[in-house]
Structures are given as structure tokens and as C-alpha cells.
Length: 357
Image (cartoon, rainbow, N blue to C red; front, side):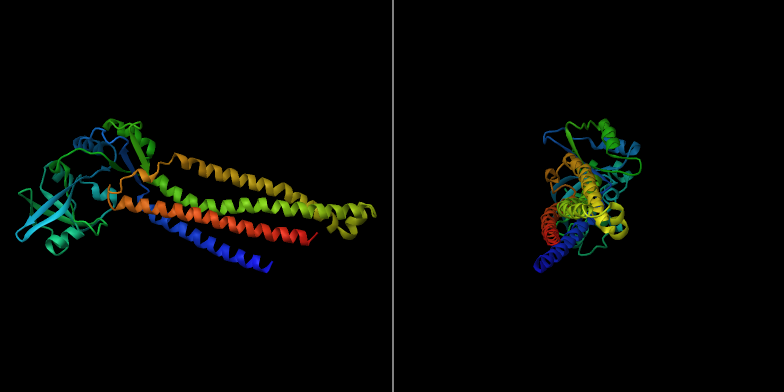
């Protein structure tokens, strides 16, 4: 029995580590819980006009997008390859980006087609050699552009330059919506119909729901543990009840119930308590399994993040995808470890029940 106890302690310790690991991606993913990503199901879906998006933002809620492309910016000392991203003025607000210097271009700049660009840190250092470059100018497509600001967009590998989409040109495929109080997924879906976005043709990825899913995985493990533990207790209880009832029956053949109760009431109380346990623990296990079903069944309606192009809103959405993947792996590991814990507990209870017979 000693080795079983040691294994049980070791497995419980591993399970606690897994639970702690599950909490980490759930906590880190809270960054995106107010975002809803809207993606067309078909690649050939019609593009959304950027002017319609701006009119929508003024009346409803914040939306942003990316129209990426490869370009080269020019200075007197040479040319530099960059990823040029056309977007709108609320891009940094929706993604919660930190503006290191200057500012993101405004809605007035967007409407006026002002040639103002915002650089990420890598672009600022690679092109100008510093992050303090607001007011500097460069050439793009033989036109002079003014650097309006520098942002920390989390991309340490690519030079990215953000410009007003009206000048960049092109239509929009994917949208990123920022929700707030009173704005839920149903409201977003209904509102976006004015842009021609229908549920039949678009997928909606509610990152708030996905963040809740990560925390639900944390909650499922202890619920599942206690549900299985209560089931494991039933069999040893049945053995103990049978033995206690046999002892009571034997005593009743020799003495009156009142005499037994006054002199040795434990003989009566033990089978009663075991019978109560046999009634309570199955009910508790059933309640926990029903609770688990209410948590886990809605998971099948959550669209898989594997459908998302990782280049979209890079690297922010990629990190959310990585957090979800890490959580999924740790969840299945936790379930496997949980099975080991329950097996050890079952062995101990069974040995104890046979020992007591």
C-alpha cells in the first residue's frame, strides 16, 4: 500500500502543476476577450468597401481591418522592404497597441487622404536607426510620406508601415470588432448586416467566448475529479455497509434494538451512515456530471481557431491561437493524469474496504 500512496502523491502533484499550467494561457488570453473576428467562409466573397465601414463606425461600434502588401520605402541612403498595411484610424484602439511616439493617424487624416504613416519599432530602427522618428519623411511609390508616429505592434521580425486605407486602396475581407458594455455577439451579427455580412457567408470568432472556454477547461478538471471520486467511493461503501449490516443483524438476533442502542449505538449508526453515503454520493456524482455536460456541450458550437489565417492581425491573433493550443494540450494531459489519480484512489479504497472486512 505504501507504494500506492507514493504514486498517488506524485500524480496529485503533477495534476496540480497541470492545473497551474492551464491557468497561464487562460490568463494571457484575456487581452482579446472584447474582440470578435469576422471572416468570410468563401475566398471569393465580395470585398467590403472601406467607406461603408467608416460610416458604420460612426453609428455603431469600432471596427478595423488590414489590407496588407509588400512595398519598398526609399531614403537618400537606400531602399527598405516593408509590409505596407492599409487600415483605418481606430486600428490601434481596437488592438490596444501602445503608441511609443507621436500618434496614430486620425480619422480626419484618413478622410483627407493625408500621406501620414505609422511605423512599428522594427521599421523605425531598420529605416531610420531610432524609434524617435516622428516628423521624418520617406518616399513610397515616388510620393513623400510623413511619419506620424511609432507603435509597439508586437512584431519583432517584420518592418510594418501602417497607412490610411483610402490611399493604400483595395477592399476588406476580414473585420475585427471591439465590443463593449451592451454590445454582444448577437448585436454585432445583426448590426453587420448593413455591410452585407450574413452568418451564412461569414464565420464569427468571439474571443471572449474562447477565453471563457480556456477558464472552463480549468474548472472541468476538479469537477471531473470529484465526480469520479464520488463514484469510486460507492463500491467501498457498499462493502462496508454490507459488513456493518451483517454485524447489526447478528446483534439483533441476540439483543433487543433498544438495548443495542443504549449500550453500543455504533452498531446501529454505522450501517445507517453507510446507507446515507450510498444515497448521497451517487446523487452528488450525477449532479457533477450534469454540471460538466452543461459546461462542455456548448464547446462544440465554438468555431475552431485552426480556420484562422495566422497572418491576420499578426502577431496578436497568432498568440491567441497559441494560447488556445497550449490550453488544449494541457487539458488532455490533465485528463490523463486525473485518470491516474482516480485509479490510485480506487486501489487504496478497495484495499481498505477488503482490509476492514
